[in-house]
Length: 105
Image 1 (tube, rainbow, N blue to C red):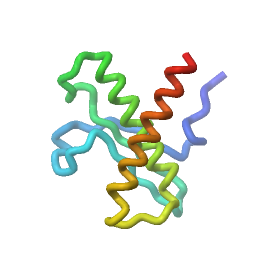
Image 2: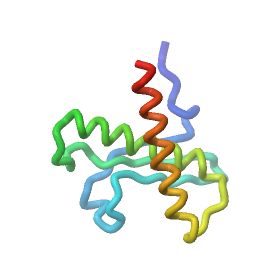
Image 3: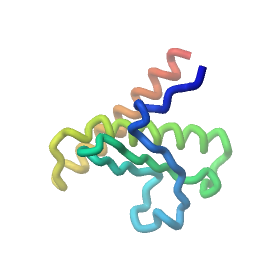
Image 4: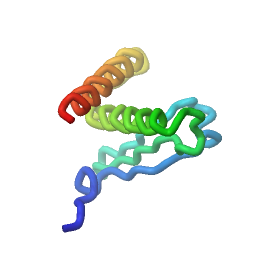
């Protein structure tokens, strides 16, 4: 049985090189199109990490979950004033989701 595409095929995932993200200095990002109900999520290419492999995997997982939480909250009102608060909430939710997942295993 073939695996279904994530999110019903509504999200596209890709890796990005560090030099491509030098301006934003982020480990990941999401671009969504509300009209098309689609999104592209990118994470830093593992080749650009200087961490041990196990830490790279953990960081990639956290970054992907972080971006998925942003995507889930995309329909909420946003402003420059709320950006810091949103980022803090997304960080905490991402960490909590991963902790729950690891606790279940």
